[in-house]
Amino acid sequence: MNGIEIEKVLIPQNRLQQRVSELAVEISADYRDKDLAIVAILKGSFIFAADLLRAITVGATIDFMSISSYANQPQSGVVRITKDLEESITGRNVLLVEDIIDTGLTANYLLRVMRERNPASLRVCALLDKSARRIIDLPVAYRGFEIPDVFVVGYGMDYQQRYRNLPHIAVLTGESLR
Image (cartoon, rainbow, N blue to C red; front, side):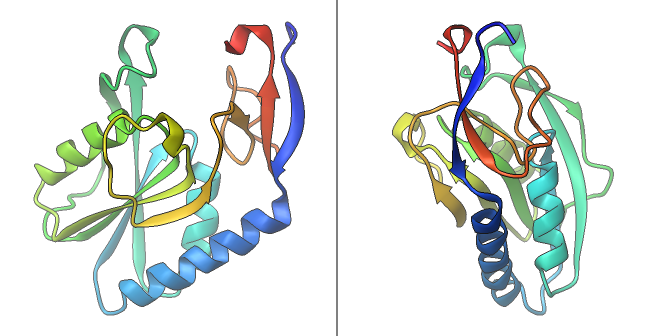
């Protein structure tokens, strides 16, 4: 695909599943006896969010938001909501589930939008944290893995809508990624 190829597996499937289970134990303990509303950001987090939801042992609902970057500038943090929540989060304990946080700009925008809806609490759960690229100090309550500044695909994450179906996280290389 135009010189794009998988360089290596960064996080194997068994390690992903183990870490999702560990995160679910933490989340279940923290949200015991609370009204938990999971908000997953499409499309990248859908596999992670599904696995996480199945592993959480407390009652929870799930809803989805989809966003798009303006002017095809994904690192700008300027986004628009293309699919909004179907249920109200007012007065609920909200867990924002993201596939990856790098600069923090997009997640910061989403947190601002959600705070305006008056949740009882609002926390972030990110499968991957690429803190080397962080521009905004962002509180990530639940972190799956810290990763280096590489382009990753798999487990829901894509490059031009491809590779989402990989059961692991892989590093993608190629000239057009630069």
